[in-house]
Image (cartoon, rainbow, N blue to C red; front, side):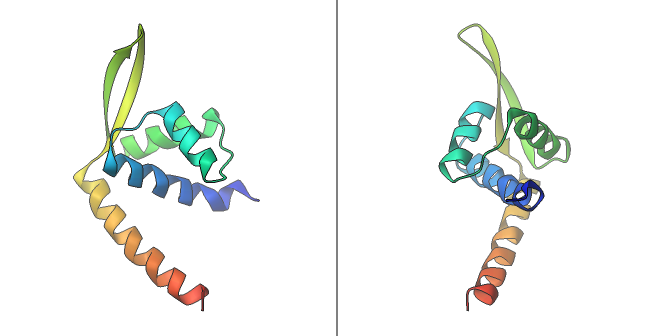
Length: 98
């Protein structure tokens, strides 16, 4: 499958999970793999950073076992986008699944 078609789905997964709890890279990679997405860290981290830089995610750093870990969580801007995406996904699903 072509990764360029799946990247938007991956971003939506990231926003969704960040709306439920704080997420970090390796956890998100495992969660995406559970859904059948094979994503490299070379794609995962730039995608998280892009969502952060665009204001959809916030980030806090914590030291875990002597290593810095970035935890991401959704912003108000991200919540608004996720709401819009849910509406568009529902509309598209209703159209293509008939």
